[in-house]
Image (cartoon, rainbow, N blue to C red; front, side, top):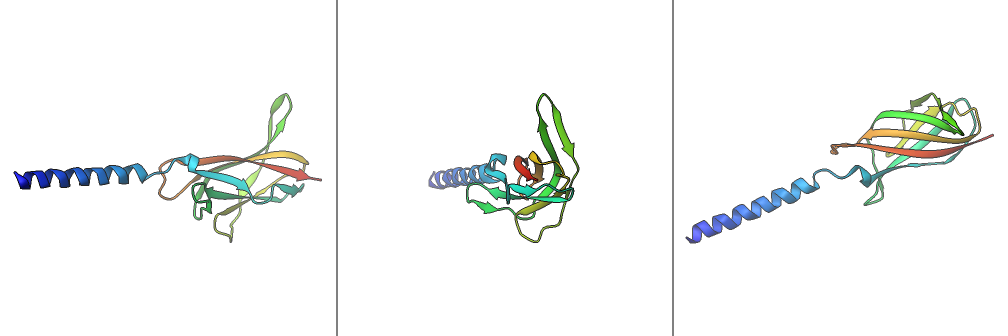
Length: 134
């Protein structure tokens, strides 16, 4: 009877450990945020808008995320937003993701970015405001 009780306790402990590990295996995409490295840019046809991907719980930059989608848009009163071209640029700073874009028109712009983070099952998406200055 003692062996059965010990075996039952060990099985329960092992099960609890597996449940805890499974619960922490994937964080919520809300645990991440994109933020502008510099939110005010000079208006130019080849402007570079750089965002930082941050893991919110520890406030550390996330390196090696894979950008899967990006778009840059200027909101227009009473109309659909005006989109402009945007391409990713190689970064030499871990956790920073630069994008070359056409911000020839001064004003408010929004960069929407989606990325896959290693070890996460869900896509991380964020909208980052920029101001193009003439």
